[in-house]
Length: 401
Image (cartoon, rainbow, N blue to C red; front, side, top):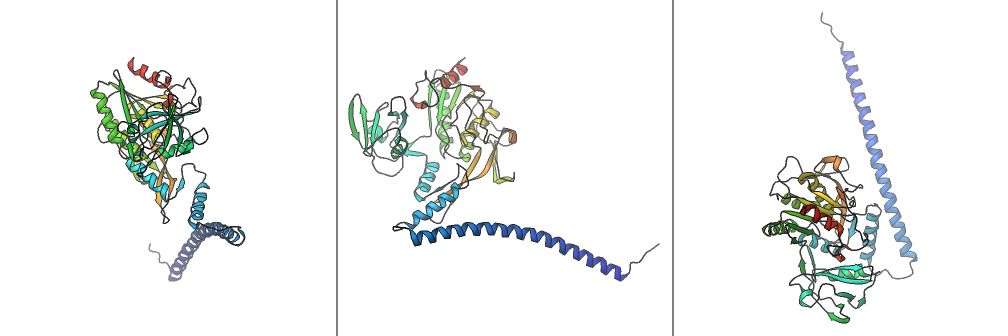
């Protein structure tokens, strides 16, 4: 039996539906508005505080404000420090230029590796690169640097003075050093490109040290591995102890050189909501090196080097020898600013080959074979001989067995 609904009832139902929709829209809009207002209020408070400080300084500061740019840079630096993220930082224009130059072109300097020996108080040259300005100036391994740019080197300032030995600007740096009780002064030029990968062979075991993951690191690694193979290496020790610099992008390229083509990904970047960040999915598609690996790690193995160690363990069954890594499982991105500087900001979590269960952020990566340095971890590894470095010796013994 057909039932007819009166026009009045239809109109009433329509009005009720419109009213309900309007009410729901108002609730949602109100919440969005409250969120926006809350955010604006917080920002307003922040900006007001800055304005108040500026007024106080302008009216009462006893002295002249000579550099407004310095004030702006300090404000930006303080803002980023307020995030309490040790991996995010503000870079001024010079730091920005130096950072990008290193990432894209690698490390440059006079061509030496150095380390401070806390046992003796000496700042020691541990390696001089062939054909470098340092070599041409006469510097040699085990020379003790006593002053840089006329400033005496000691425990408290060696790290800052060491920076004078690196850089791409075409200028000389004054280096005073001692050898066999005699003091000499040389002025080698900066600008020499220092490879991020070094290698050597011992019997049928190859050794590769990765200092950082830069644009050319993958090609350097491939060349080193091929050379070791030609020299008869049947296995390789890869040393990423103390390695933290570079980027996840370039670490993934090195992993791609080593591991075979696999189903799935070697890494994915995830934002704070668990979504893929800017389509950053890394895969293994190129070549592979078919031999056993051991990766040396320690508490200073950080960032891209941790992804490298984690994926070689999970994809190529590499043994990890040493101590637990730093646990920096996030990645940073550069954002250029109008003042010529940039913000290096943590933007995503690194999810390695085995997914969320393998995430190492704030946990670190445990070695498969734990070995502490017998001499104590406070001593720079570069100052140890192969016999003193029992992490390296353990790895050699495992592969040579």
